[in-house]
Image 1 (tube, chains in turn orange, purple):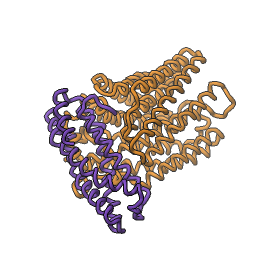
Image 2 (cartoon, one colour):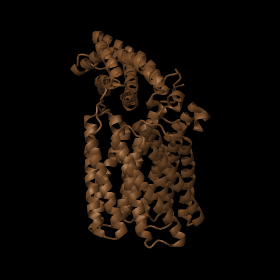
Image 3 (cartoon, one colour):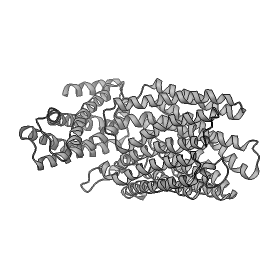
Image 4 (tube, helix red, strand yellow):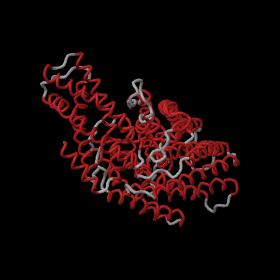
Length: 427
Length: 166
């Protein structure tokens, strides 16, 4: 009764539960796979691009975890934020199958150098991301609430189009070699994916989710707008720098990105300080940790631009942004929203909405948080000391933590699937 | 968050007032844990006083207004699910709130025994958890919906009626 009526009515703004939860459950599986593949690879410190297990692990994280959660969360949360339901829900289900299948094929193809699998996976993922972009654009077009968040969505979608186009070209270029500068396009693909698509989405969703969790005032829209304008400017400068080969354009790019980060972190700090809810739990330790890594990433960015003699700064920069910031942030948010959403669908033995604490097992999540921190530190140490063994020990810690986290996500997801039944699962 | 319409703004202010009580209770539970607190301690006494007086009033009045006046409006506009879900949460929160208020009054009069503290601690912890999640849902979903749905006349009528009953 609870979940079915709250989420099942087509006129309501929230989706059938099975749709976001299948994205979340799949992301948990890909999270485990990413660490497992990195554990099998020993060459992360020497990574300079190119096919192999490291590239596969990176895409298992970016597509399998980050994009997967971004889609599930966007399909569920955007209609609430924009006060507009999704036009149709079946394309969201189609997105899921195309993205999961495509990511498996793409990662396998990258790890094994199998062009057919890689290109098929790239096509499948491209279609999934384009469907996502279309559905999201349609929802944002009709948005009536929170214009700053909607604007973040638009910028993320613009970046996504660049990411998708470059990704598809890069995949086919491995076989056919038609790009003039594969390395430069790969760099742009990475920058647009991490900062343009996922980064801007993270900034935008933070403006609604963090105040909601902390029961705080939402930050003034002009600050969110300034944060977005600076982030957009940074993206334009770095895109220009890569496409034109004019290296000094990276400087205004990183300056704008650092300013956007400063405004973002100030807003988040203010939200938490003025929030009525003070005890925010383990999930916010992950979220706060992710915020700490952002300035570290920019310091590494400066080291790269100044060409300072710091070992492996580019790989370290990529790792801090992808794992330290985005992954850690997203795991913290997911840990928080999964029980929140699930509690709308599951009733306890007395027929009452289940308590979120009953859906949040403390031990596995504490184990995960600890091991995730250890994994990040050891992998970074391995990267900077150029030690494949240290990276592998870190990956082993990450894998163990990921298994604990996956246990939590999948067990809650199964409870939701059981509670809502197969009817809504076909969404 | 602030709202243009008076009705969601009044509900938002109720939420703020309730969270003050909930936070005071939460801090009391966190500090005392399993050992029963001294009710003559100023902070404990204040938290219990708030729990004894504010919760019942806030919950009963606020919930009735939502159920009788607002959910029906939403249902007429086609948003059936949210009202049904929040009603279910009200059903779980109301008896808990009354139980915590009654236990707080008893504690203020006679102090806690080990058993009464244990019962109070469990009920208050459940109330805190349910109430925080409930308020988060209302702040994120219900109040923005009302902001969008209410025309100025209906808003004035509802908010005036609610404010006078408060």
